[in-house]
Image (cartoon, helix red, strand yellow):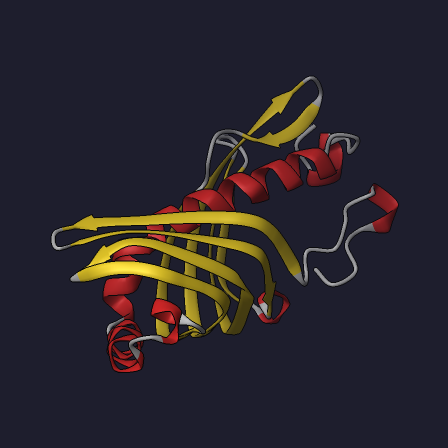
Length: 195
């Protein structure tokens, strides 16, 4: 992940750069949209592969891995309402995920003589511990409310993942599929044992 596969023109994926991720939560009295930009993720390359199963006939790969420590940083802008109208909430953010377990099911296809990901992988994520820091939440005008919201996010990481996980994984999966499919467009499927 840190070096890529230069012989096959596959770029490094660590650190991972993401231009923009948009999330929304609509559950009265909360109606919030958060845009994350210039996102950098570090730590993916430390993953521990728990299990991988490939079915050559079905052309599927299922994997289970754990990322011990994933750090994500960038800029955010939050709008909407969470008990109060959210104004002037933008600035740097940091997220630290400990022991993130990822289970992914991927379908492959051979198209035009190349092995590509077919559709969007099914990804499930569970996080051991999540620490979120949003600088300048509410424009710094209500620090107690900002601390309460941040504490809520950090103390109920399962709820955070339940609310935002599918949106995050869907957007990251689309990005990963595009990167993978572009990277392998010149690689013969025989390299994977599928020719």
